[in-house]
Image 1 (tube, helix red, strand yellow):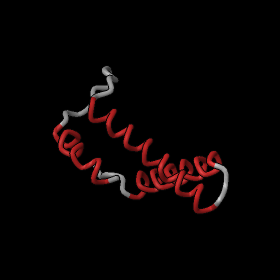
Image 2 (cartoon, helix red, strand yellow):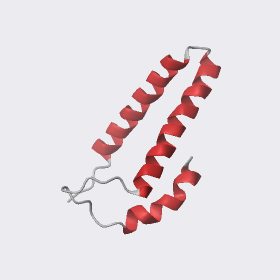
Image 3 (cartoon, one colour):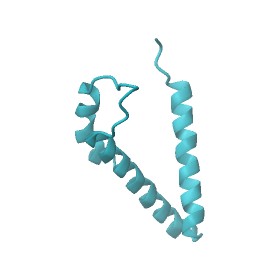
Length: 81
C-alpha cells in the first residue's frame, strides 16, 4: 500500500500550509483517503478469512487498530515546535 501512496508524497511535501478558512479537499488528499479506505477494507477482508469471523467484526477491529496506531504516532512522534 505504501507503494501506491508514494506518488502522493511530493504533492504533500510541496503543498503550502493549509488555510483554516478554506477547507477544500485537494486531489492528493482525496487519493490518499481513497487508498486508506481501500487498505482498511483489504485488511478486514484478510482478517475475515484468517480468523473466520464476520466481516463487520473485522472492520471494527481494523478501524480500532488504525485509530490506536494513529493516536500513538500523534502522541509519540509529535513535531517539536
